[in-house]
Image 1 (tube, rainbow, N blue to C red):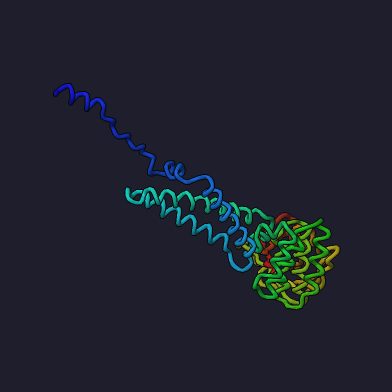
Image 2: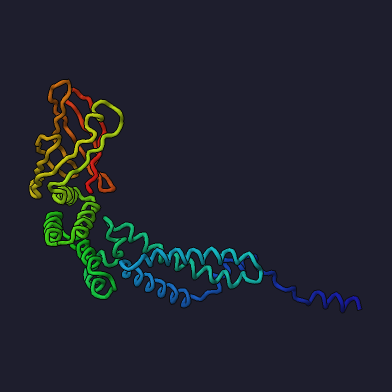
Length: 306
């Protein structure tokens, strides 16, 4: 009897121990078939490209990325439950793939020079036929379509060709707000020749209008520069020559590549003294730099373009 019992126990097969990772991400990955992953990756890519092309309507790619990340976090949280671990792990794999695809598209949009990627998507920024299709089929206003076409025009070709195209399109645009949007888009390219044109055209928009030179600090020179408006009288878009008036006196300056230089005259101790103002282009559509007297005395100044 004892022999039979021992033989029975010896012949019994012990149940296999379940791997700890069987219900985790590794187990979920092993359960998901290759075709399923491939199909889902393709679907995510198609949805991402459609969202990228529809970028002018709304930031769909960014929204999809946020949604997929949220779903991924929920799935990972669901894996803490033994009952939900298997299904949540599988869902986490799929939401993770979607997040990777949408994240790549969003990063691609951010990598496009200027703001074109954020405005019209990475695909239309580099593929002209897609840009044309985008302009034709998207339900956007005429002004938005004009801005998209302008962004495309200044994103390809040599700097000279871009500048000529930008100048012509801005000059032909009648709406002041739309012109301003185009000038700002040109400025945001950050390419020195295009920024030079953008600054010149921004000054031209202020023809016979006043700008405000903003000194910072509490130096004597800064106080002497406060309060006087700066009037732009003429701008040569080709050469960058700038004519202006300040404190009732005319002066001439230049708009170079990303830099504006012009003299001003102040009266100190009953004597006229010349101040050289040298400004450089900064993000935020603003020029900033220094105002300096011949003896080296200086003050920090800024000049908003609009």
